[in-house]
Length: 318
Image (cartoon, rainbow, N blue to C red; front, side, top):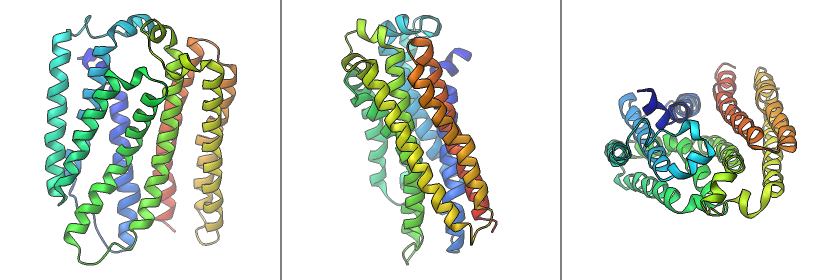
């Protein structure tokens, strides 16, 4: 059982589910409340949406591990699961089962949301994950961008499905839809950039095996210096973006006294870690250094997501 949890990257799947629930209950629901609206998708429907995304993501992890067996034996020999603890045949069976299950669950939610065209999102995600594994992860930066895009889009899905569900039952337009959209897209941008950083770091961490396999990742094609420059540049942009939001929160502080606590959280739990990340990037030279940077990127992603309930708690209690 433990082998399957590792194969599915269980901790990553938990973060996916957590991010979707945070967006639903800490952004969409509170803002709709000001418009005297309630969530249109019920809890069971939303659970199916989360499960569909989680299963498709798990299928992506399985097929990625299947095709990367040879590379993983070099990059992380102690963590190879397929071929050792789980047979290659079982892994190949798991991929279509998980993908199809995710597609069926997603199709059900698309139907409940009143827009069957949303089904194509799940088809697109399954195909894109397959193409990433078989083609794009070997190429210069394109694989990194695909994973970063999918990570960001997962965060947007709760609002996308809720919007179409509300639109199908409401006669009048949703007044606060633009506000919700801006908040959710801001978090999507954060997720995209921090995931992109982590993917570039992983390329540097796995450079030895990737090089022997003939990959042309950013770390191989452009070298460590360029990779580190891009990582640091993205982190600096993220810090600037957070400062921008902190200024907005502080300007609201005259009307919303407790907004200062949201700023303090961002400063301590996100910005300070990003500054530390930049420092550690400057110092990084070997596989172990980049492995630690990858873990730090995960922590920053989590603390960034946890800023959602912290900030919106004060927005809903002024």
